[in-house]
Image 1 (cartoon, rainbow, N blue to C red):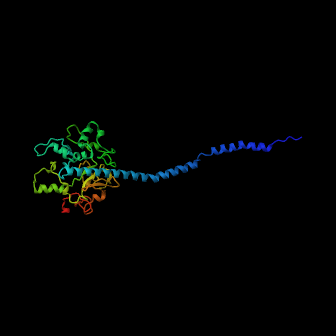
Image 2: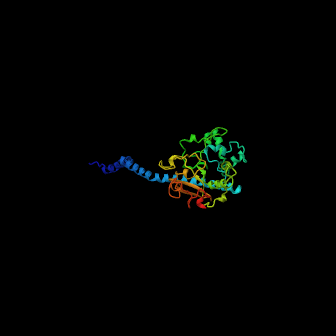
Length: 321
């Protein structure tokens, strides 16, 4: 008598654990090999290297757009001020940095026909900010004595600050002397064109009153309507804030940047080797630094006129007569 053993059945039954074994083994092989990891890292590195210039360029563009917006707002403020003051521009003040306290109305005025209050109210850095819902800049200086963080400096989000600007290494030299409450520091990214009223003032001195101290009078200002070509005339500009914005061999690289007024010598180079100007008609234009700092003969600081058809610094200058 034979005893039948269902071998085949056992074989098929034994297939269940075999299949589980294969499943476990397949799961254990789902991890990356070293080679696969190296390939992934190489791909990520390549993508980052490709994306970084684009991201960096987008960041520079965003800063440039913000700076242009700031300049346009200064233009709105200047136009509104002019509309409310018989077309007069705000007073640009005495040009020397050491005279800032006088410009801000912090020094008593004696023996003149104008008052300390007129200096304070009409100086451009005090006169224009209220039209932009900002305190007069002189108030920021006083407030910063108690809390230095209140002075607008890069990278703060402020109408006073170009987001691409850098803080100078010698910021402690930007002290405003003779301030009654102490010695605050002042810092400007956007300033009026220092050459705008050159001929306007010199003509008056030559023809009307040679001995008149014209620079100190806050009531002696140029009218916006006297700008003959507002579409190309510089009203305000981005000022360099650090010497290293320019190449070390540039003829203007070592000029003093402590300025509340400026012209081509102090023009920005932080936006792709150039900067922006606010023109008399309220528009904003970009210029390469090398273009704007070259005179009409193609030379930097060569002594020729810087007024050209595409850009005007002195709207009443001889080149435009």
